[in-house]
Image (cartoon, rainbow, N blue to C red; front, side, top):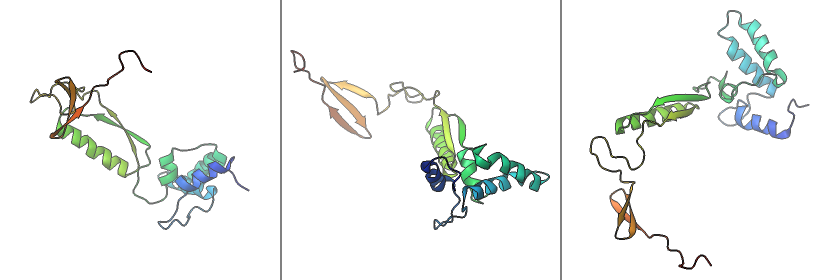
Length: 170
């Protein structure tokens, strides 16, 4: 007998949250094994781990309490992953160093399984002059002799303006 209300729920548990060895062999034989693994991992820091393991298991049993996905997937696995689902990162400074520091921070966070959120309000909008050079970004559009040009890297790509029939669309 299964504890899952629908077959899809069991498939998702098997694909995303069931603890498996590197070769794909399940360590958690049942969802009850997953609940026990999570309860044991959470109870380790308590003064009476055995008492709290039982309490945590009772909360998890029959899906009464469903922890976040990172906890369900990582707690008690001894993997080097985060148990936090999402990290709200700081603002990104409007300069190359700050942008690349933000990218590095994001890559390291995602490498450990966490999600990220950024505040991009400090980055200047498209078309705004750069602070140091007062130039427009290469990505900005320029108008030249009736056609559009878009600077991409060091090359110019010519874009033809949209031409509509004079008497409407046919």
